[in-house]
Image (cartoon, rainbow, N blue to C red):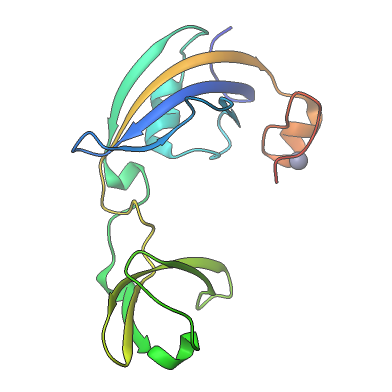
Length: 161
Ligand code: ZN
């Protein structure tokens, strides 16, 4: 069975940046399970998996435009230190915040001065080329429920919401 729209696909993957550092991997855990053709994964990887079969391996370098987007410097801003209360703050810390449109966003601390904290609302992988090594572990037809929900469910029918 080949990967196409409305198939549920399981993949083992390792994601590296351009310096060879592992950013994310399914090694040592469960494969990633997703519904193909439903924008569950980044477009640049989904398109490369199209037409592949169980057991096939691919290596793909995805540009930012096909991954988490390019960096938007206007998403970096300074906020008063006292917004964080007495909490200790260091570069690399991440906080959840409500974005301008009310949606949940994650901001990363990129600088701390005496009374100011610089936060960055870009996705941590924005602007990066992503290097994926992927092996197709399973391909199956999606259930009606999965198609209706627009995402894959686990082997026991559980939701991964
Ligand atoms: Zn669901």
